[in-house]
Image 1: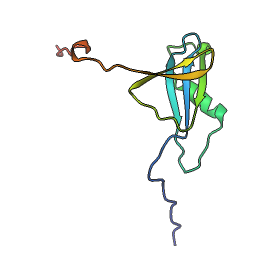
Image 2 (image 1 turned 120 degrees about the vertical axis):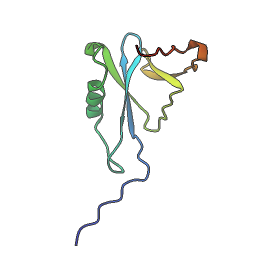
Image 3 (image 1 turned 45 degrees about the vertical axis):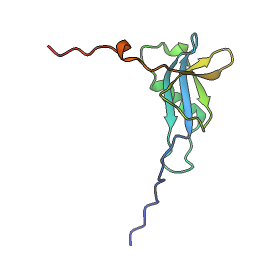
Length: 111
């Protein structure tokens, strides 16, 4: 008789979020989320930080990047741009204005 596989959660959601930011400007260059394979799964903060930094764009000098760990209940939205107040080490969310049709780049037909 085969053992029954454990049921997977019906909704998989991130439990940890790390923001990789540039220390001079506070610009967030990468957002990294941990999604556990099983309910209650965890990851140590130092492992989360290492993973987040490894996925940051290579165009940034690694010495100028830091990681800010955010509240587990954080809901990210594409309507916001995130940055870090470097003095307070606090996450800031700024609403992004949608592009108006005349501001959008025009598509060019391939030659």
